Image (cartoon, rainbow, N blue to C red; front, side):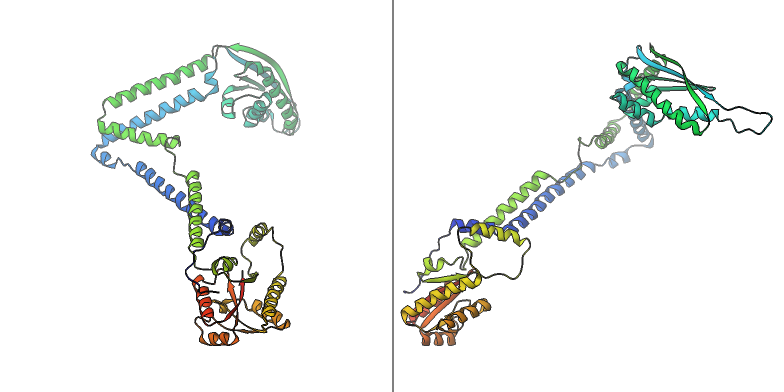
Amino acid sequence: MGTQGKMEREVNLLDLFWSLLLSWRQIICFGIIFAVLLGGLKYVRDVSAYQAVQNVSMEEEKEELSDDELQQVLNAKNLISRIKEYEEYMASSALMQMNLYQKPVVELQYYVDSDYTFNYTQESENDYSSDLITMYTSYILSGEMSNKVIDAAGLAVNQADFSEFWSVTQNGNSISLKVTCPEEKKMEVVAEVIKAQLNKKEVEFQEIGAHKLKLMVESENVIVDSALIDKRNSVSGSIATFGTQLNNLKTNMSEQQLALLESEQKDVEEEDNPQALAKPTFSVKYIILGFIFGIFLVCIWLACKIILTAKLQNSEEIRTLYNARLLGEVEIQSGKKRFLSVIDDKLLAIKKRRKKKLTAKQQISMVTANIALSCKQQGIDCIFMTGSEFEKADATVLAMLKQELSTQGIQVKEGGNIFYDVESLKQGTEIGNILFVEQKGESIYDEISNELNLANEQKNNIVGFVVLV
């Protein structure tokens, strides 16, 4: 074997792929770190921009205005608020959207026939008739009754809107209720639900006192609701009046007052409408981009680390780089279990799916058999075992190798790196037959070359290499 010079190492793309895949922990960690960093940076910038907009203070303009001028701005804000409330009511109220000139109405009149009697000759209990009337009235106007009617009739209104459809009056022991409905076809269903619910309550309210709830009148009419028409006209008139007052106020305002009013009104609209200027949130897009960028960066870093490494990456490099005999490799089983090591096991099983899996003892037996056969062919009965990182080699594996070789009649001496350890160099040269034990990820290419060159210069016989992976 000649002297080893500088060598060019070829990178196996398949090995590079598996090295990256087995580094999934670093890849995921870097992905998460950059996702948090990029998402957090975007969030901080959005918060800064949001605060910059929100903190556009009008304090300087307020200081330049007198108390009377500030009061004018406040009055204008109040008018805008009142107008907005009325307009929202007119737009959202189901009752206001109905045709009040042809309003369908169901009228039910009940009489509470109480069994209460007053006996002059003996002590009597209190009259409970008024309590019954109150209980029935309260139940009719309750949310429970509204929800029952809405659900049973399938009305497209909420409880707040339906509460405007009721009108209940009481006179003595009689209760008169009127109810309307935006869907005229469902008026009959509404009436039946009301009657059914009141019949159920009649049974429950017997605990207050014995009585009968009698339906005296039931009618379904279409009326002109003058009261509601007046109410709607009143609301519309109020909107118009407030609008006129607001315009008059604005006419007498200065530019500074108008700017202050516009700014403060804009803040109110943004609070009411979050879409106008939404508060900053973490951007999912930037989090994903950060995660992808982190993965890309760590993959580049790992690839460069593998390509530019100075350490032995696989056992085949002994043949390709040093043109030396590879007698075998022994896989070192780590006693320490890493987090989610089951994933590593699955990946390694896929990587080595085309190779027969051997136990550590079987691997050592194969290696020692190769060594013993080589030694017998050359008439060798004693070898010197060393390596560039021999002191870091697994002591258990070395002991098993020595024991197996001793069993097969091969005497084994061991020492440190012959390039640095003089005693090991002397002992190895005296024996004349050297077996190198190198380690994947530990042994340095140049150190292996130095050992080989020195052994060759001393005319030693290189038995071969064993690689611990």
